[in-house]
Amino acid sequence: MKLNKTIFLILIFPICLSASDFIPAKIWFSNKLEFTNGFEFIQLFIQQDRFILAKLNYNKIRKWEELRIIGTIKTNSENEIDFYPEMCSVFATKKLGLRWILIQGFDCDHLNIKFTKNRQEISICPSIGILENYTIKSDSKPSENSISAIVVSKEENISQAWSLQMRYIKKGSNGLYKNIPFQVLETVDSTGSFVSSEFIPIGELIQISNPKQTGFFD
Image 1 (cartoon, rainbow, N blue to C red):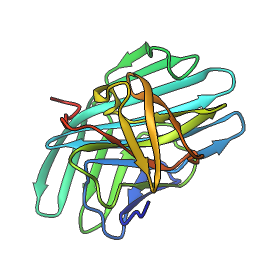
Image 2 (image 1 turned 60 degrees about the horizontal axis):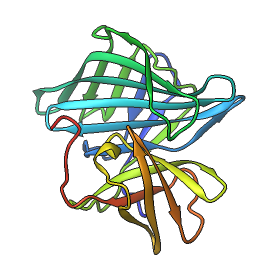
Image 3 (image 1 turned 135 degrees about the horizontal axis):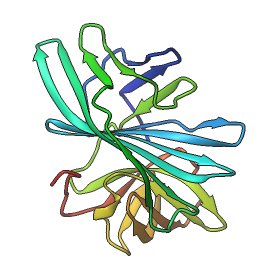
């Protein structure tokens, strides 16, 4: 899948996201970052004046956790956009495919997320746990009749994909990765399991059919 827009998260504190030609798209995903006991992905979902910044983390001991930062977007000038966090939540599950359980909720209006067009960066203060550089990518040709998701795990012949729009996908929905068709077996919250005729690597973006497109905040 060809990706023509990227955002880079830079290892500093505060953490910064930058891009050479950044225009906020509907949904963005990071590459997979591996560390000693697991790995993580970042996802940014934008809908009109609202946003969700999410992190999916797998740890061999704690298993799966998902952090969500929800807030509003305001344009201060022609060159500057501010992201205002309103609520932060942490969910957990022992296995993808099981229901997420809320384990922590807290105020996060102290976070400062800013996108300045002429500086072409987003600063996040304080850190949300990102330890290395990231590239956040969007589908170059998103379809109005599908949603984007990223493949995050595979066990035997069943793969799992992650997307904040996954809850709108129905069981049995079809999708396509390049020329490889696949079918959704089940969705639970932000994850969905699927089977494909050929192997789809972890970290790849896929498109899942969704004739009635619905946003997260609808």
